[in-house]
Length: 190
Image 1 (cartoon, rainbow, N blue to C red):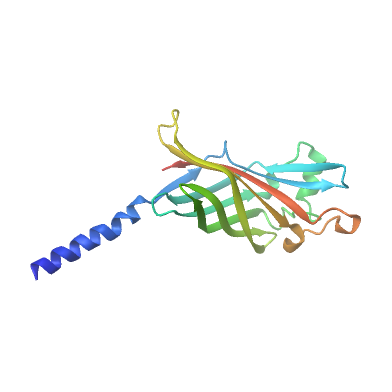
Image 2: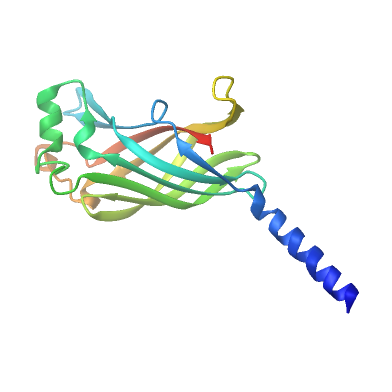
């Protein structure tokens, strides 16, 4: 009986050892941005980013798992041109008054060796949720000499069909449906 209890206790310790590896990370807003790009009549590319964001990441390098929950304040969209920002915030496009947040949530992180290669999740925009896979252009974890803590982050991208979220402005005029999303993110281990 004692041996059985000892084996059960040892099994419990070993089974929770992998769980203890997971760590929570808070996004660093000075190194995290969501940028989008859309063609403008084949002549140029309109670009903008969201200035206000918040979120958390849970990451377990050993188990190669993770979770992401990041939201962006639609009213903080910034293109560098005030009039264009107002139009992006309007009901014509992103409708910031009615839908103030965009949110990406994931519990599926794909690894290539020790590096994150994709993050598969759900993007909610204008109260519509669609699957989105963010492909990593680069990913790394490092010990920050300034913060004295581990920081993990990367540069990710995806292309979405904006009409799947109800963003139809200009489609009849020839504006493309596809929008390139670029997400740079760094998160500090808590």
